[in-house]
Image (cartoon, rainbow, N blue to C red; front, top):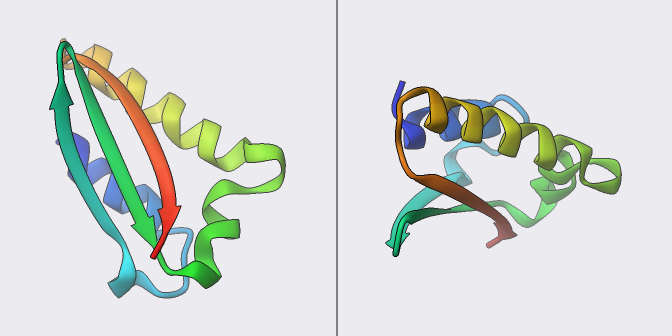
Length: 80
């Protein structure tokens, strides 16, 4: 599964407004930067208490990236 599709799948499974989810990827040096935008009402569901859910998503995406011998990944979560 590709990086964007996996990220979208994980985030959309957590939010109530699935149409508002946007995932953009930019490359900077050897690193891919994934920008995840969700509805303002759903940002808490994606981040979780003390960032636990966001960190779990980061771990899954980074493991997938390393498994596919892809570059390093950094993920940013933000509200629209």
